[in-house]
Amino acid sequence: MPKILIVGGGYAGFYTAWKLEKQLRKGEAEVTMVDPLPYMTYQPFLPEVAAGSIEPRHAVVAHRRHLKSTNIISGKVSYVDHAKKTATIEPAAGEPYEFEYDIVVVTAGAVSRTFPIPGIADNAVGLKTIEEAVFIRDRLLTNFDKAAALPPGPERDRLLTVVVVGGGFAGIEIFAELRSFASALLKKYPELSFDDTHFHLIEAMGRIMPEVSLPTSHWVIKNLAERGAQIHLETQLTSAVDGHIELSTGESFDTDLIVWTAGVMANPTVVRHTDLPIEERGRLRVRADLRVGTDEEIVEGAWGAGDVSAVPDLTGAGVGGYCVPNAQHAVRQGKLLAKNLIADLRGELPRQYYHKSLGAVAGLGLGIGVLQSGKLAVKGVLGWFAHRGYHGLAMPSWERKWRVLWGWWNNFWLGRDVVSLTAVQQPRAAFEEFAARPKPAVEAAPAEAPKKAAPKKEPAEVAAK
Image 1 (cartoon, rainbow, N blue to C red):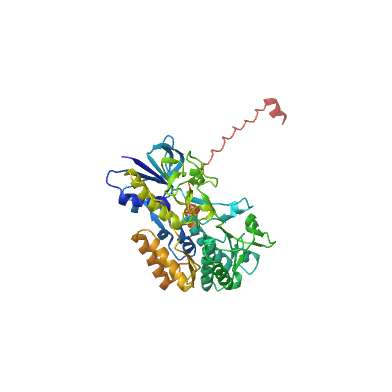
Image 2: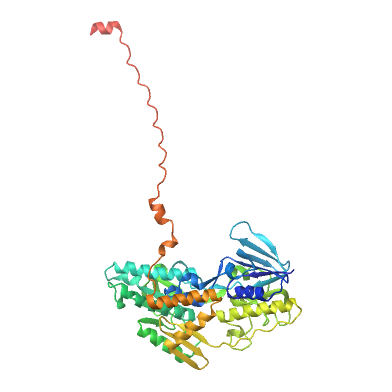
């Protein structure tokens, strides 16, 4: 029975394993998936998690709950030696070991791509994981608590200033959601006013959201400006040391929350440690049928999909001729990869990946969104319903769908939860503060030296006295 190894449990990896379970015949193949996380993150929901609209656990899909017959290993693949058909696995606990496979599926995803701007590595946070989204939410809530206890001044301005770097879909959504969240929070903080909050988005290009039309992007800018958010186009961030923002325009201000969304790159843990072919941008070289290789040469037994792979976009709409790294492509590639892999096992020909985008949806805060499909643009409340409807249905499994929908329904009546759980980052702090500890051992005092006896006086001396 052939052994199939799936490297990565994100969109493409999870959907590949999920569909293989449903379509493989009994005993046809053994599937193993390796990922350091026990869940798949539905990344389009991260802005809503950061804004308190979705419970964090509802935006992830547990591997072990939904993959019934897949062998799941908690760890990471540090090297793929396809010539020997072995992968080095570093488990969450224990020593690294070699894993032999017959077929490898590389779906390791992408990570945040940053530039060597002073202060970014030390002060910014990305938006690729559920933990980052929770951190952003808790930081904003905690900063409101701190600012409410301070008089007007530079320190309060710093706490209530939010900076987002990158004007793509992820950047605009998190920027708009946080602006909506902050506006709603002001009702709970009478000590603060709307003018105390400051929101800045920094984009190096001359426009935002390239996935939508230019008129739609202009509408988004105007809408955010009316809500008190400022977008800096054709502007570069030059420094963020200690939270002090310096822009190429000469502007500067202080902030306590910097969110970086200015691009992604293929997961370097995998692409830099393999003998599989890598293209010039550091992605796995993949054919249109999702087999690793080129039109002229196929690497037998190796497949790739998702953000880690350079998959040709046969529609002609992709940047540089390749599919853009987004969830829409990763999900569909994962589904097709499972079908193609099974077809290959059964001696059939795999199909080429062809997907023409149906459009793009974005949430810009409660009750505001946009939908762009061809020349059709829907804005405002209808765009927001389109955004929630699409992603609510796209969330894998009915169990997850119901949790998200139920959360939205509760928030409609009860409002968003405004409790910061920053303490979870140091959960033992309260316990340690008051925990009784053994007293330090007292060293024994050194023994006193015996007193010298007074010299006896001679009888002649006593008589003289």
